[in-house]
Length: 338
Image 1: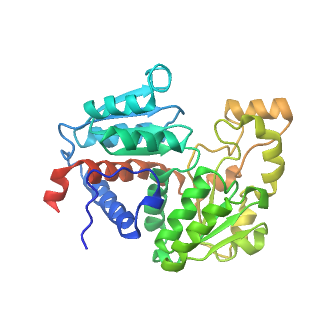
Image 2: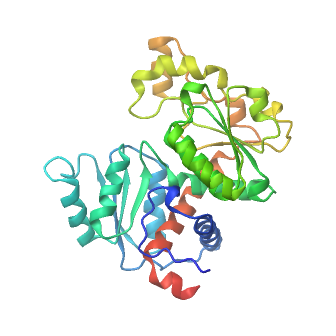
Image 3: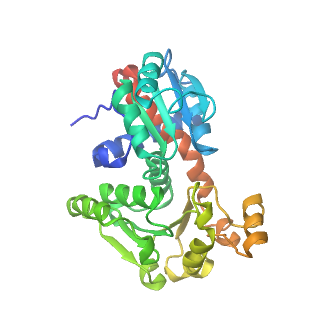
């Protein structure tokens, strides 16, 4: 069955089938190859998108802007102080107005409800650039990177997420792995396991795909035979007040070279969505150390810079996968060329 995502929003991987996710990954590969060859794209000519950002970003903003402009689209960026959304104008009214002017809307912020409201009322595709619940564009880049570095089919891959498994990354990686049949292990204290409701929903998907979904507090048990070790920062934006308790919970789960050796896999890859605290060369890490005497680094610098680390390939792939989402949901000419 052919896939056509024209007019679809991209809010969560829960909304997408495995076939549709694989279609986006294949599209991203083709677009990446074309860019590497210096072929100028035109699949989004005469299209315009607006980027709404409550939370700051490097990779998400740059990937959406460059991805859209690579294919000929115009881009408007609106930060949290640049519009009346939710302040002097309701989300519903804002969505309707933006939908009259733009062909697509990206939102990066806090509430999943916000991006869903934009999708409900705008009449155009809406893209989730990150909410507290989900980060679906990141997961596409992660899977693309895995396909480039792990010489196995997805259903033979063992994936371990280390850290706060309740956050947007833990949630989205678990969903995505279940969709594609990737064995997923959450390595974290029980307090930071995903919600029982989400686990129940994801398990239904895993039962169909054949993925094994596990949760463990034991490092040796969780990482044995892993192909991928993935982590994220311990304190997300808006959670800075939880620094002390979060560091206490997660310090035993810092990704180290010893943890990589425990996998027994010489080809283990290390992944991170970035930004990462892997040394003290950020003002935030320095402030936390000076204020609390705490090391908030979730990964050793040696791991981050090692041959196992693919984090910058992963970051680049944000561009190609986001471009694939834009083209697949907004471009008629893309489907005419298939």
